[in-house]
Image (cartoon, rainbow, N blue to C red; front, top):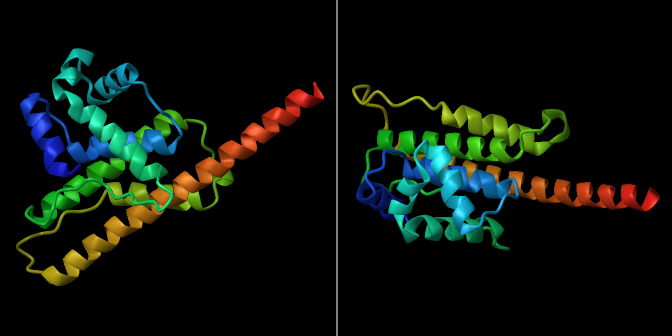
Length: 192
């Protein structure tokens, strides 16, 4: 699955939105340990895109494929996760916009699931979240500036790689936190 497939599905369904932001949203939900049935997926995505659920159905199997792809990426043992972003055929500014949108979607999805997150109890996750917020506010390059394209490309690649690491950190800490919460719940029930 790649960015172009999702973008084409958006065009066919006559939907306005960002494929990168949708992927980020799904990854945020999944990272927060939220999993959906196909019907609930359509309803959730419709809410996210601020459209009627019937309009999401126009995406066809692409949405379900994207969701399964995202679950597989995040839950793989070798963490093959990578944000779905436009390829090098797009300008660097277009890719930066998509990178920003991906982070915004991820943060929204994770916050939607984990609204009770407390920074002081998150450890490395708090730092990763703050960094994703910063990346979501990335400034576009002034193309008239004539900066070093190789340096700009290298910086972009570093940001994408950082997002991969940040998501791995968040997923890992959420998983550990869930196990601790379940153990505490079990202990509370056994003492009752």
